[in-house]
Length: 343
Image (cartoon, rainbow, N blue to C red):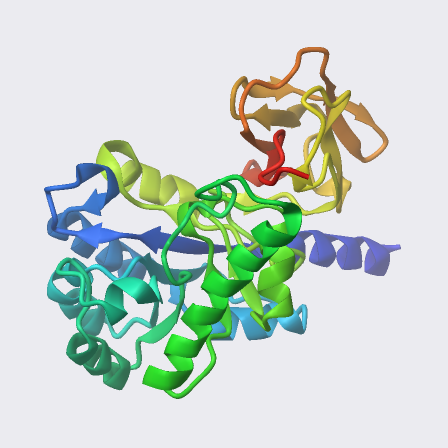
C-alpha cells in the first residue's frame, strides 16, 4: 500500500513539476512602439531574475528534442525567443544575453532581411549572433496574417499562398545559412488547421504560437504556446514572475478543435488529461469575447454550454484550473468562425 501511495505521489509531482515557459520578446529599448517593446532595464532585470532564482534557460532545440521523446523537462525550465528580428535585439538585448550566457532563438521574417528593411537585423549582425550560438528560425517570408488572405481566394489558392510564402522563407535559410529551419513561429499568432498542416508538410518539426500559457511534455509540437513579454502591463516584473509560476492543462481533445467551426458551437471545453491533478471545483473555460466562465464537468470533460453566436472571426478558447498544490494551470487554442477562402 505504501509503495502504491508513493508511486502515485511521484507521478503527481512529476506532472506538476514538468512545466516549461517559452517567452516571446519583440523589441528591446525601442520606445517608438511601446506595445511591442520592453525597456532595457526591465529586460536585464528579468534575465537576472532567471539566474538568481535558479531557472534552467535551455535552447528551443533542446526543448523540442525532449518533447519528441516525451522525456521529463528540466525543473524551472525556460526558453527565450525573439520574433521579427528587429535591430534593437542586437543592439540592446544581445549584450545582456551574452552576459548571462543564455541560449536564444530569433524568428526571422526573411523578406525584411533579404530586402534590408532599416529596422531589422543586417546579415553581418545575424552572423555575429550565430557565432555566439544564437539560433535563427522561420517567421514566414512576408509576415502575413495567414488567416486573412490579401484578396478573395479559393481553398486551393489559399493553400498555395501559404505554401509559397513558407517555401520562400525556407529557401532563404538554405541559401544564406546553409540549413533548413526546423521551427516556425506563426506571424501574429493567427493560425488554423490549414496553416498548421502546410507547415507540417514542409518539414517544420516545431510550430510556435502566441497562446499565452506554459507547456509540458504532453503539449503538441505543432502547437507550442509562448508567453509574450511586451507593452506596459505584460512586461512588468509582476507579470513575468506570475507566468513563470504557471502550469499547463494538457487535453486529450479540444471542443471545438482548432480550425473552422460553427458560429454557434453548442459546447466549448475539452477532455482534461490527468484530471486528478486539479481541484475539481476550480475549472473555468475561456472565450476571448466573454472571458473566463466557471465550467461544468462530466467525468474528465470540462465545458460550458453556449447558446449565443460567436461574434469574432477568430476566438481564443481555453481551460484553466488550480492544481492540488495551488498552482494556476492553463491551455489555450484558436478557433475560426469564418472561412478564410471562398469555397
